[in-house]
Structure formats: C-alpha cells, structure tokens
Length: 217
Ligand SMILES: Nc1nc2c(ncn2[C@@H]2O[C@H](COP(=O)(O)OP(=O)(O)OP(=O)(O)O)[C@@H](O)[C@H]2O)c(=O)[nH]1
Image 1 (cartoon, rainbow, N blue to C red):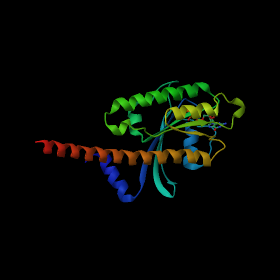
Image 2: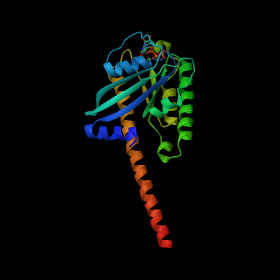
Image 3: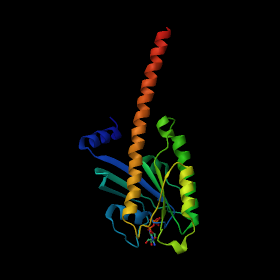
C-alpha cells in the first residue's frame, strides 16, 4: 500500500482533512508575513530566513477541522522557479505579488505559465487536466500610495486563468488573509470531489465499453 493511501485512510479515520498549500512569489512580497498571519494571526515585521519553511497547523474552515501544511518558499535567486517536486507535493497554489512591485506581478505571470506547463506534462490522466486550485494574491494593499499594479489588472489576470483572486494586506488584515487561505482550501476540497467523480465516470465508462465489446462478439 502506498504512503499516500495510508495517509488517506488515516485522514478518513480521524475525520480530518489534510490540505497542502505552497506559497510562491518573488522575494519580499510577503509570503512569510501572509503564512504567519494566517497560522498565528500575528504580523511580524521582519523575518530572517534564507530557506523555505513548512508549517503544520490545525485550523477550522466552515466549522470543520482541517490540517494545513503550508510550504513558505524562498526563491534563492531573483526569478528562480520552484522545483518540480514542490509543485507535485502541493494540493493548492498561492501565487503572491506585491501591489507595489510590478516585477513581482510579472513573476507571478511566469510562475502561472510554468505551473500550467509542469502539470500538463507531468501526467496524462484527466484529473490533472482539470483546473487545479490556484489563488492569485495581491499583497501590501495598505501601501496604496506606492501602488504599481491596479486591482483590476490582478482580477483580470486571475479570471483569464480561471483562478481565484484576493487583494489583501498581511500587515493590516487578519480576516481577509484567513479568508484567502480558506477559499483556497475550499477549492482543494472541490477539486478532490471533481477528481473522484471523474475517476468514477472513467471507471463506469470503461465498464460500459467492455459490455459493448462483449455484446458485439
Ligand atoms: N506594508 C506592508 N508590508 C508588508 C506586508 N507584508 C509583508 N510586508 C513587509 O515586506 C517585507 C518582506 O516580507 P516577507 O514576509 O519576509 O516576504 P517574503 O515574500 O517571505 O520574502 P522572502 O522570504 O525573502 O522571499 C517585510 O519587511 C514585511 O514586513 C504588507 O501587507 N504591508
């Protein structure tokens, strides 16, 4: 039995849902600030870390307990892309840019492209061809006077890609930041339901095919 099957059985037994999210974006856009804000409700101004961090915490979403695993990435070189294994590890993706930094928005656009390509080429199953959960997050909305990326631009980009969108401030917002993570969590749950249904459809479809072939003989 594979490790993921054992994990799924344990999860079912305990009645807890497990959701793995990866937070991606250029350096300094507030990935850590958002993650820490969500998990602890606190805003800590400066973080001294040069590596990626993985956090695990149980949170309530729509009155149900969810175990969140959040991978806060840290691009070592400006413009570097995440490893394939990171992309395959995650159930959902949060792509963060800062409204004060147009180049970080451009980086999110490249990341989105890379993500689509990576998932499309990694598997030929129909599950992976379905829209997977991505939330585009425009951070630092408190710094209006330094704005370089309009809200509409972010919204349009997210819509073009069938993604969710949220404009937040990790420094000022508690509820909105939580809502963004909750929305992504809901998308992961919806994706799992669709995947299950698609698998079932394919299985039933195959059975139908066998029946028809048998009838022909
Ligand atoms: N004004 C304001 N500052 C923010 C906000 N979010 C983060 N910051 C600040 O932006 C800086 C970078 O925040 P981090 O959370 O370390 O950004 P990061 O994306 O994790 O950065 P790397 O780990 O270097 O990739 C820090 O000085 C934060 O205090 C925000 O919503 N508003």
